[in-house]
Figure 1 (spheres, one colour):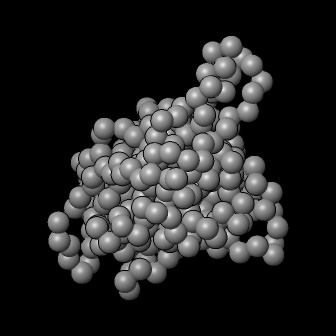
Figure 2: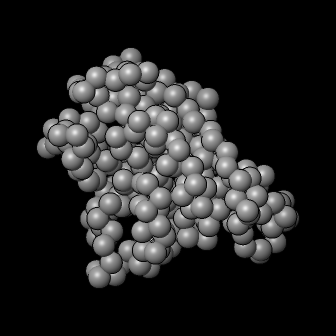
Length: 267
């Protein structure tokens, strides 16, 4: 689909899980950015470092792979690098509603093709830790004082109902709403009634033959029998890149949203 000069072509990829997710993005992103003629690319990085958080080294690795911005989630604090002021994390956005004393920013503005693009990250309050305030009212406050040309929200949440309710609440006030966290891509990408592009969950970037990016044996033993085994991200084999391509118009009127599930082999 061709786009007008006033539209943005955006790629957004789900939770990057460990080394295999990072390598898959390094291998696949250049191909996908060229295929979709992307103006801006976003990756959720909250599982990038051994499945827990994103170190500064891996932050830089993902930017080098082709991401223009990284979002996070409930594992944001698991890498202590985010507390070190000597590290530049200026392209990472953490959940806005983690509270005012959380390091870094929950919403950032980027300049793209002469337009302003705001990226906001939020965390849910149902069966996921980390939220210190209400994402609905926090967004009301943010939107009351912001007027960017495009606005994208990553809602890192467990419950599909909570995701859809927030998306409908923001419909027509933001350009694109994506859910992350479950590592399972949903089959409901659509443009909502007032023009906002929407998907309940992007999926993940990581091992295809796995339990949500983790080694199957330990995951089964932990979930089925409560054994205190660590989740172990895989490092070789077939990987998948799950996300969406969206074409965003001005006045928060989406032109297109389509899911992506792209596989690459990691030797």
